[in-house]
Image (cartoon, rainbow, N blue to C red; front, side, top):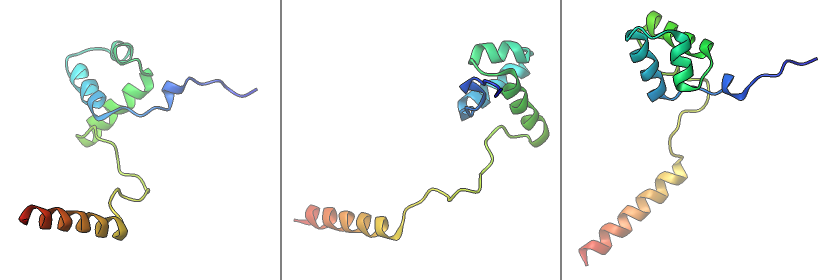
Amino acid sequence: MPLRRRRSHYQQLTEFERGRVVGLREGEFSFLDIAERLGRNVYTVHDCWQQWSREGTASRRLGSRQPHGTSEREDRRVRRIVLHLWQKSEL
């Protein structure tokens, strides 16, 4: 029989929530108290704190996915729009 898991186990903390975890933990709140305040799993809060303790940063690691950016086609479109607006403002 498969285990049922709540969706909150899989949701990632936002940068703001990560900062709150570190701040509250430095304020000597327990993992359980922080998890209840944020509505997150205790293990998620603990993992965030462990990363902060180990690496000195609470930000998410970059994954193997493609970095956000613009394609050449989007770059050409932006240049065309800017040039059009620039020419229009000279009139």
